[in-house]
Length: 353
Image 1 (cartoon, one colour):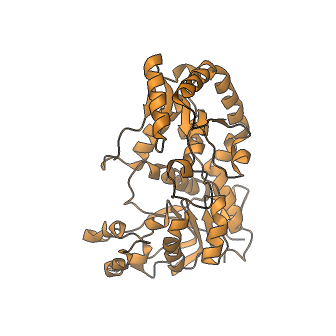
Image 2 (cartoon, rainbow, N blue to C red):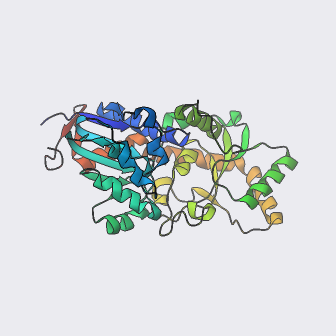
Image 3 (cartoon, rainbow, N blue to C red):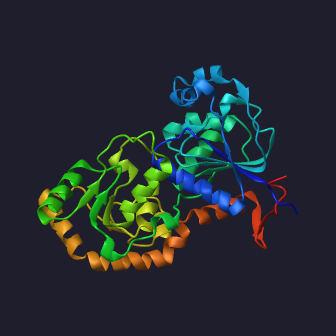
């Protein structure tokens, strides 16, 4: 048996706190496999043009004019982890994978509207293992691409989101990212009248001189110092973004790992209860009148101690399955690599040769 050499493709041009999650995933792959982080070279003065003409858009054809150099990676196992197919850049380089053995592609976002871009990524090289983070996306991916897809759910770095003690949770309610306007306004009024703190997203953009890890670390600090976290499924806050399934996105793992009492609506994905346990979400009807909503907020606040205790118990039972470590080991198993005596070894030569 041989010990495979692993490498992870890293796109240094990605900015924004959502890429902090991607960085954590890549760091965990590197920790477990000993993989080298291989930065995709930026094309001099053209370094941002690949992002301006993303795959899957009407301007993607202009990318062919940016091929100005070769780039080579050497690895037995190559990991390519992308937030979405639009992040793919190696169509801008020639013969980059000639020294690569087994290639793993992991896509966080695989919505129906992304199928044209996903096809472009699939055609760019021979992928041995293709993985989506959404179980509900597997049927349309397999139908549209005519290849096998696996699902490995999203996750978190547990140490980053480790819950703070109950006595230092100074954020009473929070809501980050997507939200429902009427619910947000109602909760804001309740907190103002009750003298409670409601923390929510106020900025549309991010400072370009701040790294994804800095953004993500600050975001994690807010979550683990909050009691209640309002979370809603994608199809409820952004109708049309997804059509045939209800994705389990990163915010559910982050809120659970931070020990928040999650309020809202859970995704309809049948795997949600398996990942988080029954009654993991305090289910809320977003159609309630404002009078009824004010009653809901008060009842939640009065029951916060009991709800936090239930969250702590759920954390003890389920949190190990929320980690990126569990996700990496699942992917290694799919690739035919096992850990023996502390070393990763090829156990299925039909997978990796």
